[in-house]
Image (cartoon, rainbow, N blue to C red; front, side, top):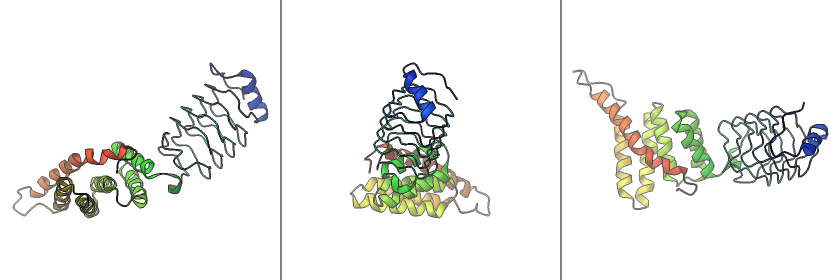
Length: 251
């Protein structure tokens, strides 16, 4: 299967890759390799910047030391691929299958890997987990965000912003008691750091969230609805605090 050549791809290298699946150090910048079958291919040290490998089959491929900066691997299968030493700046790994792939610690920090499968939490840093959770939350994917924040907390239990962010996600899912617990714990962490204003805000948010679960009073004065509105306002107020998690070292 021959794909259209990219503007800067070396045609000889491209033919060699498609014919033999062995092309160390190949110059394949901007190459169009969508849906390419490159299982077990040897692409060590290959120059693949800005190439399109969307939905390509790269299971078992040797990509160590390859330059994959701004390369599209969206939906690609990279099961068991060796990506150690590869440059992944701006690489699109969304919806890719990375089951069993070999990665350097923190290698995904500059890539886009939302909804990729097969990534073990041990392969991800605190910042990677938390930032992914923040992005999922911004898009309204609260159950996924909650899972990511929980994984981030397991790596950095003292990161107050992770507790705040998870509390917001839990509150948005109606898990009021769990949300309040997260806010209260975050408040204690901020208090230990001498940030009393943030601690007070979080305690107030915890109380508001709990109040939102109480039914309307019998006389129909709408107290429950008012409390719920207050809870939503609390989430919106705390969101900027949680968003600080986007900073790689924002603890």
